[in-house]
Length: 181
Image (cartoon, rainbow, N blue to C red):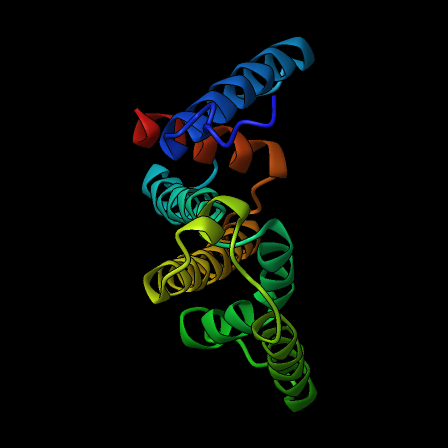
């Protein structure tokens, strides 16, 4: 209708709906295939992955209230830098120097491109203040940091406990459903 009214103004509700559907489908799939529901990794490991994923997702949805979809998409391309940094700091992982350089250059290039134009969403554009820009960029930074941490922790679960994608999905999504409530 051309209205700027938000149909689902609460990001947590969007996440809850997404996670409920995902958990339901994973349970049906697992039952249909006769797969086990016994986790290979300690359950608290999934809690941490889920918490960082939940923070990431909420910030991603909230950022769209302040920055444009194009800005957010470009910010996502900078995910390599947080992943490399978290992998180094938390995962004690060693990367080649060129991997650090590539991730820094990609992030710098995207930042220059984004900051060279209008970054606000259509709704925020009408109320364009420095606070709008600041909030949008802060939410994007938290989103990228949390998403990079999530990736690092998921990789740790794959390597340390030999978990499969389905197992990680079902447990992290189940905890995200609880967090969303």
